[in-house]
Picture 1 (spheres, rainbow, N blue to C red):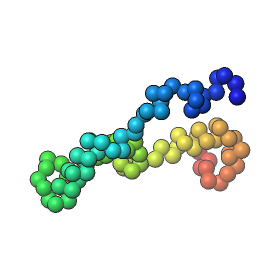
Picture 2: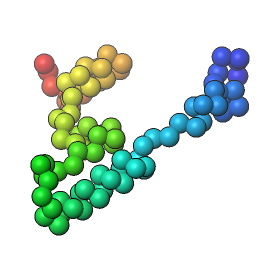
Picture 3: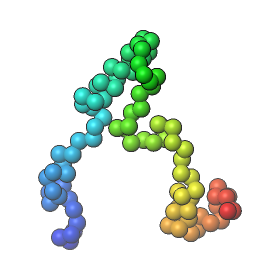
Picture 4: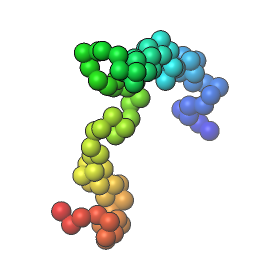
Length: 88
């Protein structure tokens, strides 16, 4: 490997410490609130939006199909003849 390749040995050690917030006090509290809502607790809202998940489809966002299709066709033009892609 050349000197410009990033490996576990030469990468910035701070990247190894990055934590993805799937746990922690906010997630714990969100779960508590969800349980309270299931038990008919009175809140000024009726659902908890888990914005830490970063899975927008799981949160109800419609897929960005058109953009993904265009990028796929640009990256691999041979797909232009594939029937799975609309003519437009």
